[in-house]
Amino acid sequence: MKTWMATLLAALFVTRASTEFACDVTVNTESTWFGSVADVSVGAVELLVQNVGTTDVTVPYEVLLENPLYQTVNTAWNVQDLRTEPGIVTGVCKEPWQDLYAQSDNMVELGYVLQITDTAEQNTTADSFLPTFVSINGTECTVSLGNTTAPGEY
Image (cartoon, rainbow, N blue to C red; front, side, top):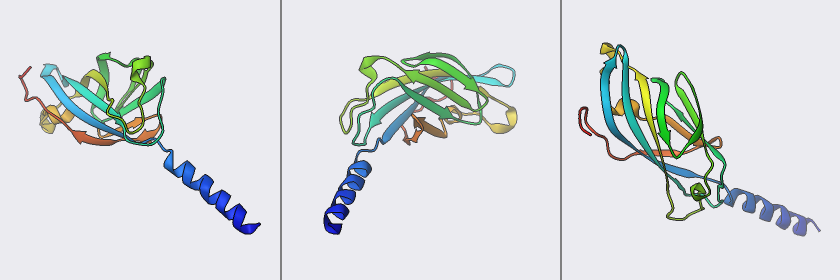
């Protein structure tokens, strides 16, 4: 009896551990406008989100970005219900085509035009717009740098 129960518990544990959601996010910075308003710069950030776990994530799901310089979002694409507070941007993906299928090649593209705090002392660059933390439904994503656009390039 103990062997049967131990086998069942082990199987349940393995099933739970192997059905986790995990995400990879590639971040590209696009057009940036530095110092267009006193102490503020504006830049576009694109996220390519992929599910590398073993459980599908279906809409709706929440995407959270953190960067201590983030002030507000001017506009966004493929993400809705935006909320901002200093250093944090959250939004919700709701469209059926935004489901993240486990271990597949599908990616979801999200984009934001962000305002960040910009002072002469911090030497703002395109990398200043990169999130320092990204999560989906509270699960931290692995973040990698894609392409960055130099200031003044579009």
